[in-house]
Amino acid sequence: MIDRLLGRAELKDRIAELESENHHLERRAEAESERRSDAVADRQRAEARVNRLEDRIESLEDRVERAEHEERSLSFRHTTAAFGPKVADVLGRLRGVESDDPEGVLTAFVPSDDALPESVRDHFGDRSRLVRRAAPAVVVADDTDAVSVALSAPLPPEPFDRWAARPRLPAAWFRPTGRFAFAVVRSDIFACGVYEADERVDFEEVTTDVKSTHSKGGFSQGRFERRRDDQIAEHLEKARSVLAETADVDRTIVVGEQSVLGQVREFADHTDVTDATGAPAEALTDAFRDFWTVRVQAL
Image (cartoon, rainbow, N blue to C red; front, top):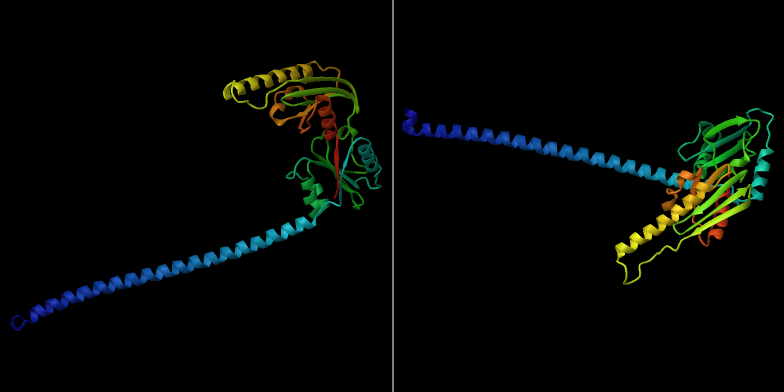
């Protein structure tokens, strides 16, 4: 009663309200401080992660630079292209390699850069990168490193690797042997020869005047393209007939434009892409030489 008379009751109520409000503000301040502290900690952790990533990137860039430098410094000792008698000479020299050790000479066919046999990796070590670059290739090496070479094979074998006293180098992988048909096909020309070893004993050609550009006026673009497609289809049908009638051969090899090879693939034992151009006989001669050229790379 005295507090009410003196006005102290209202003051006490106001003090209680202020104390409650102050307590609430203190809690808000503490929460804000904690949030600021968490934010600072999060920022510090993020900055530390950024620094680690930057260090990692710098380390990887150094490794890439060193690898590129090593790749540039590692090169083939010698590279040459052999055809005809030169291929026979190279094969003759390699076949002359013979070891007293029944496992002194390594021969392997490496079909791609990601299919290195363990024997090749073990023998060549760091130089295995050269083998990867040479693939697909037949690799020949001996245990003294006196011989170390990769040869492209026009008619490659199935993948293999072996250590023996002598290298395994059948002529059929690298040179024209036996009686076979060899043809070049493009959308406008076709030429097929029958060969006995490297001598052509028969020849047939097909030439079609396939329109390559659409002149102004006349046919619409769509009609022109349909006509051109019909011309190519007719041309390829003639080529297929020639290949189907080719007989008395051990195998048939067809090379040509990638876009049309699929149309004659069923008649071929082996296909490859070539950029040989010109008249049919000329294109066939150029394609034949390109196909049977062997790349020789000293490792």
